[in-house]
Figure 1 (cartoon, rainbow, N blue to C red):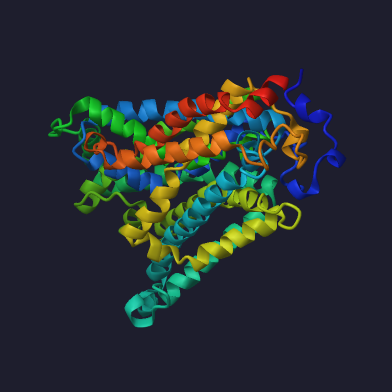
Figure 2: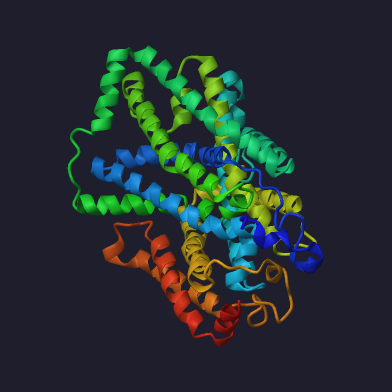
Length: 495
């Protein structure tokens, strides 16, 4: 039986228009190959944020081999989790907010969709602002006389300089233009945006090697990769290993949750698994090696270890290198932003009122909201960041756990597509007034456990453990609570 068999006999006339629009309906476009998923992950991984995170991780006092094995293990686990969460969307041809209707209920699904959308808006603004900083550096390199207009103290507006505003809005418009052209345009954008960073970073490494000499550069790389002089920290190798795993999975938790938004377009399960293999463990480890090599070369080249690629490029004395490299990092950051944040927010907010809010309208609304939250102020305020993003992120684990438990453990991988778009009280996913109470209760309990874990001294060494606590609590609690729900049990059995 073909993988799309569950949607082949679903007529649009059977679907309630209050729950559907052209973006939320089961897709008939199964055109994504394994290379498209490789490109998807390249766009997600090849960013300034990943570069800096990896650089800081290896600059810490953690045992180097524990970090390497932790990254290796963590990214393989991300691959497995993505393969799992892809299945319901691939089977039904529906995006993340529609799949949530099976587990949370027709109305209850608004909760995970809205929260994921808010997270996407916040990070969309932050990523756009970070990319615009690179554009400011480029402009000042080419026109130093504009430096007063990059000074917030002299001409600041809402915490951003005039030049910063111009750069931010320019990147905002560029990303909106890519998004407006649709999912196929986004696919083609990722096909060249992700690989472009490899070309630029290799060229930058050759430039740095030429600047310091091959022998000095090679010794710097060897010293960096062997990490001499590092001693075991007090928590030991195993703790560092676990911490790196939790950090890696937490870092990818948002795109992993809504991976179904893209898995629905796959030609086959094989394409998803093959693309995820090359795009996650293989590509991530290759990018990690290239990042560490580039950072290592900054020591002999500039006399200081630099973990920010934009700062590294800004210190070079070759205008051509500066222009090409900064533009490439800007494009790469725009790639991750469009893929991970713009698209997911569009599906999620469109799901709030499908009949009135189209996919494009929802996307532009999310983009406008990202401006009004002034992401630079949010990013520069640790307290605000913790209160908003950390708390919201603690819900991602329970969302993932409930979806996986419902699909694999409760329903045995069977979903009725027409019932995903039905407001009838007789529908499988109507539950009680459109809400699946066991799922909501599981969400609340798992979120509490995830947040409480951050205050336990025994878990203080693992700042990213909340995803695990929330996810596995949900996987355990949801089947237990659902089995006690007579209505859910009856409908599940009848299905």
